[in-house]
Amino acid sequence: MRNQKVEPTITWREFARILHEEGHTEEEIISKVYEQYGPNFKGKESSARTVKRFLREEYPPPPKTFEDEVSERRTSIISSEVARRDKKLLTKIAVTDMIVDSIKDIIKDRPLRDIKPFKVNVDRNYSEETIVLMISDIQAGTYISDEASGGLNEYNWEILEKQFVQLYKGLEEIVTRHKQVAPISSLHVHLIGDIVEGYDIFKGQTRQIDREITEQAIGVKDLLCDFLLKALHLFDKIHVVAVPGNHGRIGSKGENLHYVSWDYIVYKWMQSELKNYDRITWQITKSWWQIDKIYGFNFLMFHGDDIRSWQGIPYYGIDRAAKNYRELLELMGLSYNYLELGHFHVPSELSGVTTEKFVNGCWPGGSLYSMKGLVTANYPIQKLFAVHPTQGVTYRYPLRLTIPKKKGTK
Ligand SMILES: [Mn+2]
Image (cartoon, rainbow, N blue to C red; front, side, top):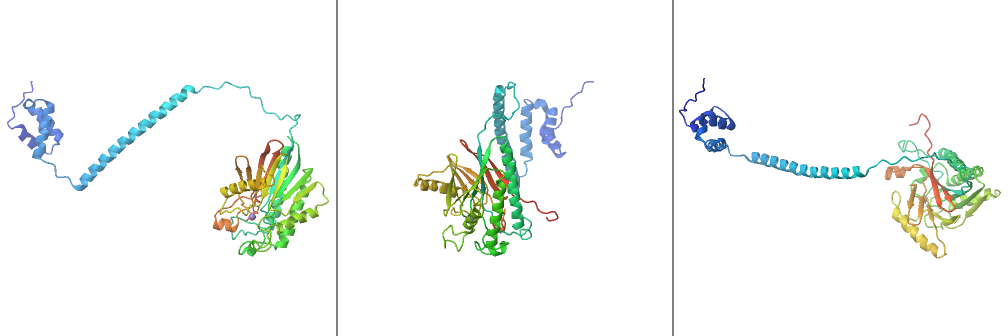
């Protein structure tokens, strides 16, 4: 049977009002009105526009509150921001894709090479090298209690003695290794100051030492002499060059000249005790600086306490000192290739245009002052390096002097 449309008895407007009262949505009303009154309108779209306008006029929406407006604005800002970001991201992805594509085109497999395993040519005559060992900032007599440092560091004379054993082991290991390849016959020991800890360098120091200054000097002199005699097993010749530091100074700061120092006493004492060993030569002067010439290279050394610093390595201060020393030495027609310093306790190698600078580490590691005040500590390290007749300084090693704690302590 044909679905006969019943002629409506009410206008589309009345019909729309009824639907609205029944709770239909705007969309539903629009579609139902068109269903019933289609022919009244020019077309579906025009009907939708007209019905919509009618409903808005009949039932105007409640005025927007301030909160509604804010919320609408928020949504619009967010969506426009998301769109903006999406656009940026798209550009980024596209650019990256283009780069990847262009790289893909130029990536090619490398042809296989015939790689032969490396073999040391034992018949070849490698030129000899000379070893330099920087010794400084021993600060013998330093006492740091494990308890007072909260377990961060412990230091005392017993540990210092163990460190000398370890220093020799390190030297022996490295030299024996390199001797397999090239002849090594000379050791240059550069003593760069602060050999003793002193007792009146800073306030309260007497409570941070475990022996008097005289005992510090006697004890460390013995340890250094023993070390040199042991090293005679490894080298034909040992050359000792020495400059004083600031910890061994006698009298208050500036009261005496720099060589009025326990460091200087220790050096001269060692020389005198070992004078019968003609394989050991000595270069000890009253100067605060020295130059050791190894092959064609000049090694300038001074302790470094005249370079102002606050915490860590004073890069600019060292740089300025290096340049000033260059000018100063020119007066005597001297120049240098390498600079060696102690004092700062931060083992470092700083390269310049023509000069390399070596800053040595220290023996006690972090002091109560550095750990509590500056919240810093350095591993105990002394520097060793090799000098080649034409290349200058080649390989370099940190000789680590950390002594493991006894079992049962934290
Ligand atoms: Mn110093």
